[in-house]
Length: 204
Ligand code: DX5
Ligand code: ZN
Image (cartoon, rainbow, N blue to C red):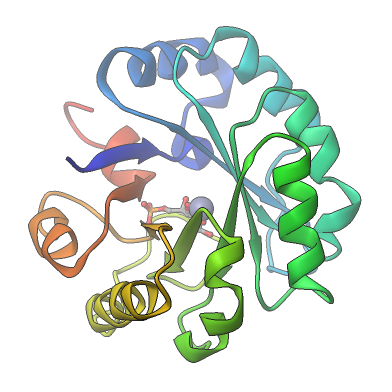
């Protein structure tokens, strides 16, 4: 069963409660894109917003850290009750220890990987991760087009997970909507992130 994780990046921040209730009623996870203006060329939101969402969320929180030095902040997110935390392979100086840190803090540990990053780099870490977040757009902004090669990348990651005997699930992030859900599920994704397709739709 595919899980849908609406990204609050495209939510209405003036009426956030309305969009939180929508996710509570119709989706599976809250995807929270935290950006620092350094790892990605955009700044989104941080602890105060995640804390506010946590107070009303009835579905698990999934924090996607697009920041440098994520190891400095994972405990603070876990302390807010965040159940899934992903960090970028490109941003971690010591990925193994950051993943252990996330698990030790009581959250599920995810490795996010940019479109231009070779999936083979994930190999040594698969058993230390609970999920892999395959970026299907360049991180930083919602509303971009799905990068086509991402389907093959998802399939490749699924094979690598099987070969390694690991049991992480695959989350795919960026440019998703009704048009590609079925193909992504067939390629091995079990968790789909959607910002624009969820909140900018005529009928979210
Ligand atoms: C991009 C974020 C995504 C983004 C997805 O950096 O990681 O989660 O919000 O937006 P859509 O679904 O509109 O492509
Ligand atoms: Zn994201």
